[in-house]
Length: 164
Image 1 (tube, rainbow, N blue to C red):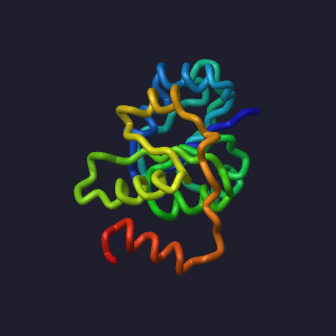
Image 2: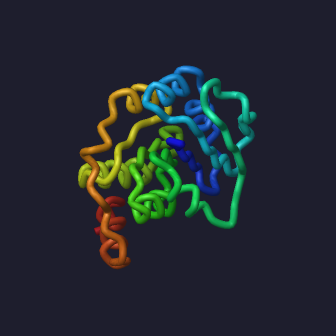
Image 3: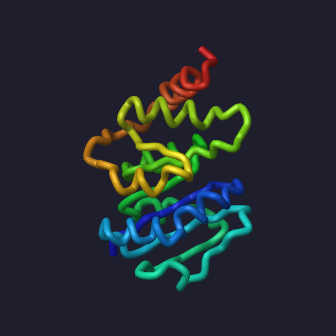
């Protein structure tokens, strides 16, 4: 079953969950052949019902000890732009679409997403452009992020955040 996994990490990002579960986005996901939507909603107040997205099987939860299996089982990961969530999805070599929370002040997440996108490791958008990004995305342009070099990732984060 072709699956999309959505994660907000430990944060509250109701706008992302609402955007993914919207009628228009659900229609686009169905048109792309996705059949299942797994939502990790974190501390948010939005927890979609299993029958809330017509045409998709929906599984929603707040937290688990590990989301590694959800990521591994996904054909597409849609994530907030937290470094931990990005690194976990990229390390599992799953196609990643990062949704930047443009309502955050001093948004280092945007810098991280821009740099990883410039290096062809992920696609990124905001909640307002999510549906259009899904409609036009080409996952074949993404290249693997090679794990196993923590210092390289630390240097990359420093560069992306302007600390170097």
